Amino acid sequence: MKIIIADDSEVIRIIIEKGIKLIGYDALNANNGHKVLELLEKNIKEIALVLLDWNMPGLNGLEVLKTMKGDERFSSIPVLMVSTESEESKISKVYEAGAAGYLAKPFEAEELNNLIKKTLS
Amino acid sequence: MSTILLIDCSPKMTQAVTELLGDNVEIKSTVFEEKMNLSSYSMAILESSDDQKYALQQIRNLRYACNFRDIPIIMVGESFNNAQIQPYIMAGATEALPLDAPPVACRQILQGYMIPGRQPMEEEMKYLNHFIKNTHTVLKKMAKMEVIFKEVYFSNDFRIFGDISGIIGLSGESEGTVVATFYWTLAREIIARMMNVQKDQVNSELIHDGVGEIINMIAGSTKKNLVGTPYHFELSLPSVVVGYGHQIGHPESVSIAVILFEVGHSAFAIQVGIKPD
Image (cartoon, rainbow over all chains, first blue to last red; front, side, top):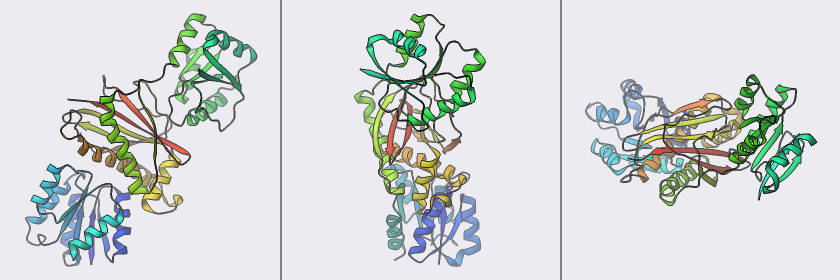
């Protein structure tokens, strides 16, 4: 199964990709929100989870999350938000929009992998 | 007592500087070396040579040797014309001082540069401490690097001579900028450690990207700490500037805090300029 990693930073995508391979997942990479929706359309049956950065150019992470939860094809796919936005009010918005979890940057690979395993268990 | 280092200064120039600064400072003389340690000096004074290309290289080396500390580098000579001065300043000299100027003026200029940057007030440390702590946390968590905070001071005219800066604009209740400036070799090492790869596997694009992400994480995590204070801000998307001697413009009337860190044998600087609500 695959995990979509959406972050406008290539360095962050590489760090996360290395981490998720250790727990048995392959990565599909997106550097903006529109690309996430494209990848979902093309690979819907293989996607186990979506990791979204909040601040991305174009369609941001929260907008992607809302779009996914409003589309019955994608609404059951769990979404984790990984972002520098870490204020309580912002985190509440993420959960209200239907995210399965939230992780603030900076993070250690192990923290993210534990959250992924917990979400998919 | 402040100590001034005279580099490649002739006996005549040494005599002139000693007479200008008198008994208030300790003066040491040395010859230029490619790798010098300036950390214990209040000022470095270099005598200009006929070979301007060599002199510019000397200034660049000395500026790197400052490790981001605001040590004035003064180029002295019998006289300078305007065309000579500009390259010296661009290379990192603080001033090109012609000693044919009136001694009173020369003395005032030199003494002016020896006034250290303003120390932060207790109120200012309340928000600066969050930047210091979060810089430590970002490098520790993402790159497994132990960063040591060295000093902080305010300066409105400090020119940061690094190779690459990550910049993030602040808006909302307060406004300003936060900048992280690194030497290229340290930036490469940090990004390599973040990605868990060898340094030679990290290209320029990854360094640009990673430095942008580092300042994003430092500013982002600090933003949370400042909720409910006059310093709370919203973040812009980060941008990155590359090139020796680049300068960062900050909003007018904002005091810039320069925070210096040491990591291994290198150093880096965070500049914080916030105009509170």
